[in-house]
Length: 328
Image (tube, rainbow, N blue to C red; front, side, top):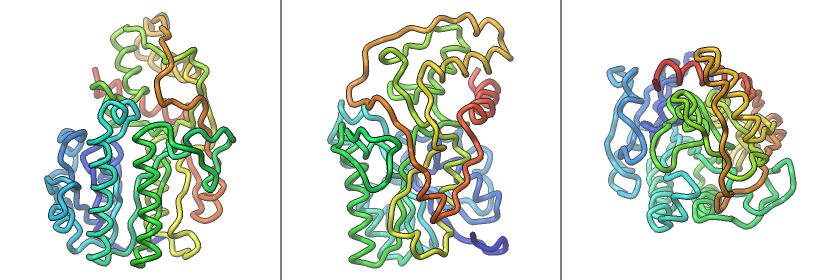
């Protein structure tokens, strides 16, 4: 970990998004300078309202598909936390070209800009989708299968490019394979909304959530504060063995979608008892979905001293409180 008095300038791409805005708020609170690059394709200005006027914060409206925007954003930057991407497996199936443009071409632009600017380290959002059709559980970083969606392909290509830039150009990189991240500021609206905020909003309106499949698919749901911890550890580690590789970023436990909805109804019922009676509906399985996802976090524990604090239930209690205050 860096010494408390050390202050850095951190570029957070996608900094108006769910994860990026949480990272921005966290590092600003610790006294760092934060530069945000975002085109607001999926990010929101309301995510920035608590710190937009912080003198240590700078917003650049730009696009990672534009090499000039990337070059301007990395000027004077110590570290890059690259969160910008078009997420969602269904979105990538519906529009593989745009997903590739943003997630691959945009990623490459950022690697080039970071290399040219001689940033100290490039930490990037990778994805558990990289495990593809690998059936072994828990998921271990060096055993992956074939991708099951265009999105998964783009995130795997990111890892390959990062490895080449480390070996060829000496850029320090660390990839964080996010597993189903949830928490405050996650957008419940739109066709590609994540399952937790979408279900929360439906339950608050006494609407029946629709689970894809029979509800027995399982996920390693990961609270945002665990993800923030991993980004900080990846950015600040002085362990050279810990650099130029990828890590699972998860809690290391799994829960079925049926379990998830049960917890949501339980926690939301504290605010509105009628929510306990809302029925659940079931629909067809979704294309590109894997049945089960569970991460081994042993590598992160060993090399980065990762110690996640929030289980699904602990994270949901905090998240539900935030949703109740902000989404109604």
